[in-house]
Image (cartoon, rainbow, N blue to C red):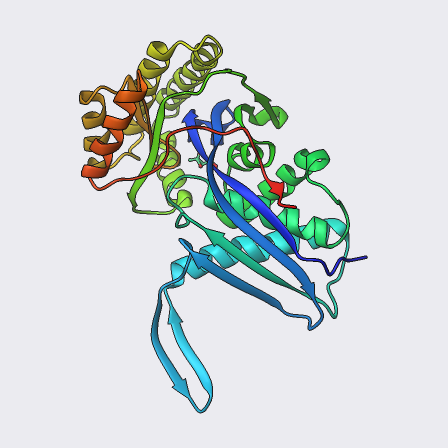
Amino acid sequence: MITMDVINLRVPTKVTLFGEHAVVYGTPAIASTIPVYIGISGRIINDGVITINIKHGLQFQANNIVIDKGCIRVDIEPSHVKKILGYILTAINICEEELGVARGSYGYNITIDSPLPIGVGLGTSAAISVGIISLCLILNKYINDVENHRQEIARLAWNVEKTVQGNASPMDTYTIALGGLRYIVPSTLTAYSIDIGEELPVVIGYTHRKGTTADLVQKVKKIKELNERIFAEILNTIKNIVEEARRALINYDLETLGLLMNINHGILQSLGIVNTEHNLLIHTLRAAGALGAKTSGAGGGGAFIALAPSKSVQEKLILVAESLGAKVVSKSLCRDGVNIVH
Ligand code: MEV
């Protein structure tokens, strides 16, 4: 059974506060959704094809457009195409396999509208995976709301990330499917909500990123293989940082949180995933009054998070980050996960 109605979804992106990379090896991490949303809408169509419309931040770069006897030939910047289409088509396949449906004579018309480019470390690929899985489950009438199916959506979206990236932790997909600030335990596939009541005065943004998440995860794996014992010690330290940070969040202890962010950043640097430009940004934010600042996510440039002691310092940090060429996307975390827009 299918529905021909148009379904509109609002999918938040996310920031990692503590524990990235180590989470790939099974240690817990802390991440949160942020109020920067990808719009995904879609409906079933009758002609057996999948049509994908991509807008704004995710748009591909199209080169050498040639119109030849009514046919349009175009070269599209391949890494973007590969990435976005890889996630979308894998999500549709995984969803249909799970449901045991053969598409046959019908197809999908899907539109994705993102304010962010893919692959900056803020969970755009996980958001697309969560969104397309949710969309496909709803269009095939397997579910009719997301509220009671978040765990199942998270599990299938994680399968999408693993299939496309090779090695992915459940952190991004579970955070985005469930929403809010989460303490993620990969071994049990649990993402506990951390309730902090008050808003954290954060500055979240990104700089240009080199390398894919898969490349950066591979880079860390090489360090592990070079010295298993030291790597095990590093994992253990990150695990302790995450535990302390969970306590500091619950107690709204901003000073401790800032210190833990700085230590976590130092460890990420020792793992070789922080580039010089990012390091300059992080250290300048600290000098400008941040209690803590760190690279967030896979690294290679990309996302960062800074913690301010007050709203006025938060505004100053935004100006500092922007003056160094960073794009600031959020001043807060958010509570929502993927949702249907009615
Ligand atoms: C991805 O946002 C962050 C990494 O920890 C990879 C993963 O968790 O799959 C680097």
